[in-house]
Image (cartoon, rainbow, N blue to C red):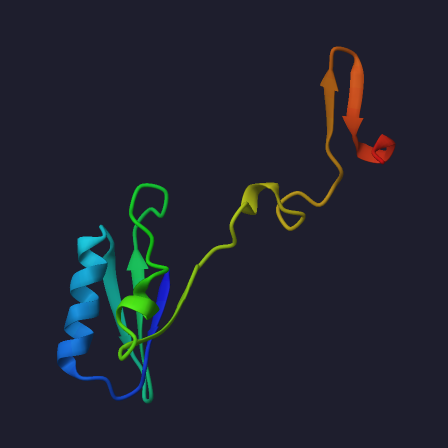
Length: 99
């Protein structure tokens, strides 16, 4: 996940956000820019708690939280552009025969 912090937040607010990220099971990677600080939260979203509530829990510090990868990536048209067919007991489902 990518966490974008608001500009000019205090070190105390930043530390509180980092502490929460660690508490939820992620390893934060801090990237400081000219105007903003961005934190990459490294960890498995399937086994760790969600970071979606950070903007609500830290309204003075967190601007937004965004996923790095799209959900359902393996079944998307980007990963699998051709039509799929499945044979169920001799009946083809999908492909050009789909309605």
